Amino acid sequence: MAASLFLIRGWQRWAFCMLLAWPGCVLACEKQSQPSVDDVVFNRVTPETSRLDMELQERYGCKYPFAMIFSSAGYQPMSLLAGAQPATPNDESGSPVTGTVLIGFVLNADGTPIDPLVLKSDDDRLSKLAMDHVTTLRYRPAQFNSRTVRSLGIQVYQFK
Image (tube, rainbow, N blue to C red; front, side, top):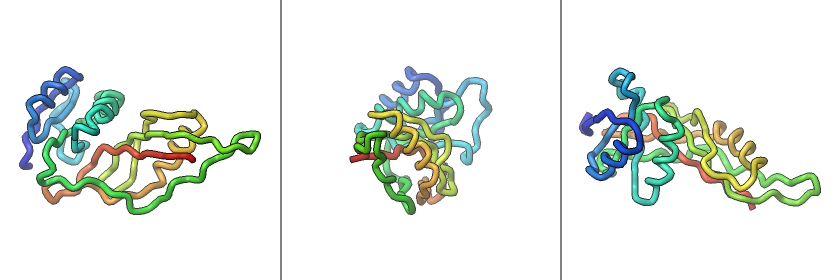
């Protein structure tokens, strides 16, 4: 693999890695053995996404090793293949329940989202709807150096 993998843990080491802007780093617990590339969750970090990326990775903790990609060279992000925004629900009085929900997830190499987490929600009723819906979506998986890889994803739901 072209990117160097560097085992780190915690937000301090994550920040250190961000400052160094290495082509890729793996976040992992000290007790884990060296992960195989099939276990690693790749994530393209940009200035616009870094806050949400860090929050999502912290919430997953040591469940997954992450490879942070700071350059787009060799990396193709996931893209949605199938699935549409669910309809805006109505409350008991018939009024629409509106708001935004951000769902973070790990995208398996087969294009299926797993392990979704609510990152932001304007309404708990919308959170449940979005959480149930995100695992029905299908994506074209991310690629790194022409290899299909797991990746970190965020799906935005706008209920109007």
